[in-house]
Length: 382
Figure 1: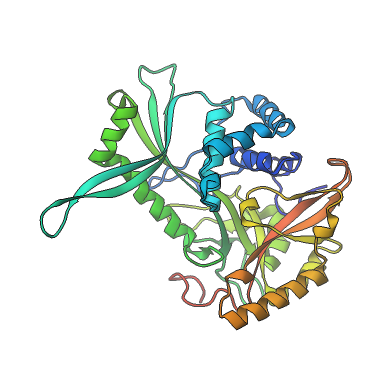
Figure 2 (figure 1 turned 135 degrees about the horizontal axis):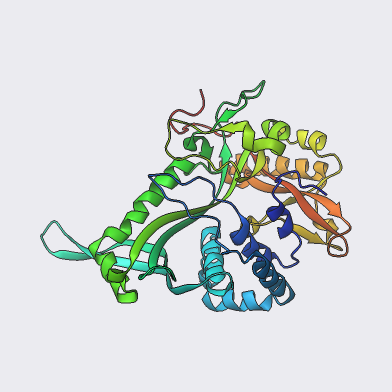
């Protein structure tokens, strides 16, 4: 069965793993970067398997057969199990697990989550301790062909952003679609993709600080290394459901780089759709016969797999519409709207996988009617 949301074979393979945490580990290895490298922000490649793709797949299959290995590591080392339940923390734990455990990688030494402290002068002239930042990843790469190794400083993020530019009540934007980075908003509009990339640029300057260099020298032979900084930006971009329905099979040629910006969207990014709550009925026309699942935030990374016997947890379109109506009434009473912004998985049966399961065939956000309300990033909607 061809996946409707993503034409990437790597994404489809994720659904073949039974254990959800193993699927999330596979996401870290498979997901493309959201933006391409540029002079202003160097982007890591998809985690390099150094020609060992078959070994990598065998490792993942072994984890799926014995998921207690990754569960034990997350329990002992994972920050999200220590009280912080944010998706970004869980994602950083997964990246650290992959770098430490996947046999594809060969490095000398790695540090993660290293806080950098420095001093600044208070108004009274006294020196005060302050936090300058934190290294997400410091990774020493061995180089058998050079006399010295390379130290890479990574700053990481995973994002789920909705494209909002050029949509009209009637009609669709022209193709190819221009995609400035500030037209991709988080569902709660706290930031956009341009904000995030600019923040990563600031974070990557941390390794230039004298206090940061002292920490690097304590952990690595920095004087004998070339230090490279790069961003690691994975996730999904979501397009209005009508645009996505017409162009998702060839989205790589349906979007055009914004030549006014140095950073450009990676045409191979993973993607989905978004729809206003009042228009959810169109999902029945686009996806006849499908069921629906509201995805908990910690399960946003990889495709949903619903094992046989749990079908009652899936929603019909009518059930989904009723649920959204109730959420709208509750939100109106409370004067809050965030609870109406949900990630949905379109679920279809696949009797050939895992002795009969429902798997995610596409994914999209449902947002309240009128989203996004003002204020918007400068230069988005006309």
